[in-house]
Every structure is written in structure tokens, then in C-alpha cells.
Image (cartoon, rainbow, N blue to C red; front, side):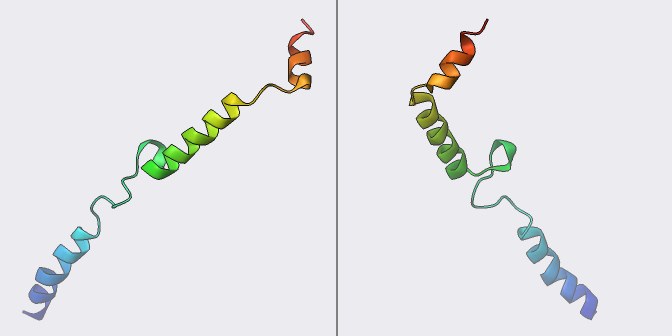
Length: 61
């Protein structure tokens, strides 16, 4: 009897903890905020001018 009551109360609580997180993990296990920060960082790097060493490395063909 006591086990049935514990299961009746405990099981729904345990299953509720298994739902989707509020952070909304996206592709690759990162949150939407983390993905946005990574995209912003990539955009900043893309906007930077190439270093002279990188430009010279392409001229060695």
C-alpha cells in the first residue's frame, strides 16, 4: 500500500524532471543564446582584415 502511494506521487515527479529544459538546447547541444554568441563571434572574425602573413601564404602557389 505504501509503495503504491510512493510510486503514485514519485513517478510523475520523476517523469516531469525528464522533460525539455527551459534553455531549449538546439543543434549540437548548445542553447539558443550560446548559438547566437558563436554566430556573433564568427561574424566578428569574418569582418576582420586578413593578416599580411595569411595573405602571403596564399601567394606561394
